[in-house]
Length: 493
Ligand code: NAD
Image (cartoon, rainbow, N blue to C red; front, side):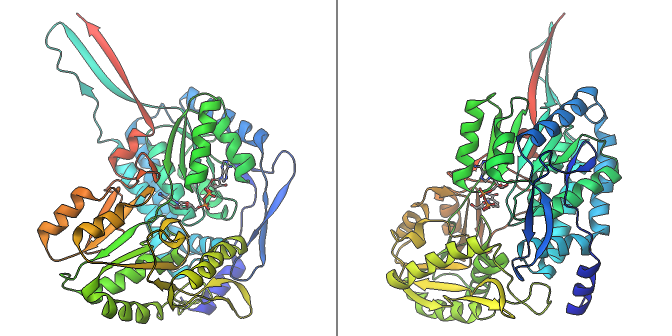
């Protein structure tokens, strides 16, 4: 599609702006709304229902009623599979609309949304749908005289709270396994990016997910999100977002019904480039992709580049050249290579880090906030060299296109630097020495180590972090652990 095609499609786009509760679009009970703004143009896309505790309560009651009467939880796994496979197809059938909703709502390149986010979400629904009728329960090895069954059961009502960087994919990562397992869901999308979740809910109903099973409640974190976290009848919270807010959810649980809390939080992921890496061009390509893709708004962004001294100068020259390939532009233009930052506030945050870097490290690329056609919130791909490990640029999650480079001499020093962080989400290692790769996999304290690539992930493999990057894992069969409880049934005979 050309820019003109995307613009024409955007003109025709219909936007759902109410909450989706008990199978219908409804306004907030208070009647309040908030604007959803396109960060590339600063134009208001729609006024969205600003839901509050009373709307959350309504959604939780609908979800509970649906769970208890078995309209979804009582279906066989094969029946739920058929419905969720249909939902995956509907997501694919509506690829253009979803890609536009993502791009307009949070600023990402529409071509990336169409090539990566939307097929990714459909793939996740398909994967969990296909998996659910292939999971067996257990019989414990008690010996004769007893049968001890270990059964996996749906938990009940799942509260899902998601961020704005991959709105559709994060909703899919949570809702696909939760629904496949037979739970009911109340999803609270980020206030910056509610549009794709609302469309997903509509399609879920069309696919055959019964009324009340999948609810989307739009609103702010401090109101709707908090009410979900504190609700006495929610069995589990699955959250993706910042470490700061993740900690709030642990508190909400403690203050209410001790609901299970699963957290996918922030990161400050290191990318280690050793001088024995055979393909330094590929390493530079992927190092740039690892921090500049999606404007650097990625929890597992490779935001710390640790490079071995002997190759550091040449590698940084390569990185400068790679950074120049990422040029902020109209997110609807297929020729653009970088989109807009989600909103003005996040842009201010990123810019403050850049200003700090200008006085404490060496700026070698980018460093400016820009507009496109005189509008919007954009930041150039930015690289700082000579960044001290104690600098805020090395320690704090910026969540923007800002790379901090530090040089190391030995493998031991690289590992110390890599692990010197409160986070533990991901790390990348570039080396052609197999023993070194295994040694590093042994000692890096992260949920995913990518060797000779960055940010490797798939529905087949668990995703999540150690330390303050969170608890629990999304994706893979392990995701079902979040959304089910084990029941032992012991029969003596
Ligand atoms: P955020 O923590 O500000 O918001 C995430 C969600 O929590 C939103 O829906 C928001 O409305 C809600 N929320 C905010 N304050 C709340 C409160 N006081 N009580 C209840 N809910 C509240 O995060 P964000 O800015 O939307 O997203 C960026 C963050 O998400 C980054 O830290 C990033 O690393 C993280 N993230 C992590 C992963 C992962 O899998 N580990 C993936 C993507 C993003």
